Length: 337
Image (tube, rainbow, N blue to C red; front, side, top):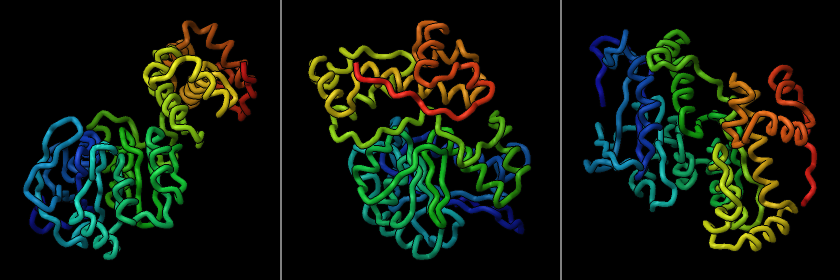
């Protein structure tokens, strides 16, 4: 563990556990605010904060991008930390952590140390039996994965992070920096948290309840092929795929895909795709300052006029009204074609 300057009390002590194929950005977006909060300027001395990368062996841990990170400390006494952060990553590449690490996390929980799951770290905690009777915040991208694996849970994917008593879960991405700033402010004050973000050229910390960009959770459709098709649509908003391309990726004919969507959603795939793009457009209008024309381009519409017509048809409001007044409205029901 990195040591503090002699005689200076540590206000915030954080231990990190890295999953196999962990997300490097999730680690760095947590550690960098800590190091900037720990000292004056950007000298990075751990005067007010300390952090450690822990592992049961000396073997480096591989990140999802292939870079290796070495531990700075073994799995020691959990109570020496104010928080233990589990950094997740790829879900389907085998065991995320070994049995020794899972046992240590249970020991940390028994000692009353708050456990934090970032990115897919929530899955690690749940698999270790450490999310019972607690809600988890997961990325919209992994919402269905969490529901499928943990059927008795109700994950949240419409916010950046969630504090549920001694469990904190974060969807990942840039929201990890917001979570780090939240904890820094709690232990060191708002000024220190702002300074850390400003050095990183981040304007301000977003609240836990702020919406995830592109948060479009899929309802339980009941057919994995339709769910996969919708996920492909969600991942290709700015440059929409053709329905033929989506069907091909699923090893289906276009006619088969059309029939599946009609059976499960009573809508054609093209209609579902358009609704997803329009919902994301509304999120952009309500949460960013991008011009309507830029929003149209970012959601895959050929021009602002076409976008405005489609938007008004779906929401019964024009984009300019949503941008200005942001009133509540219920989308119109689009009939199957």
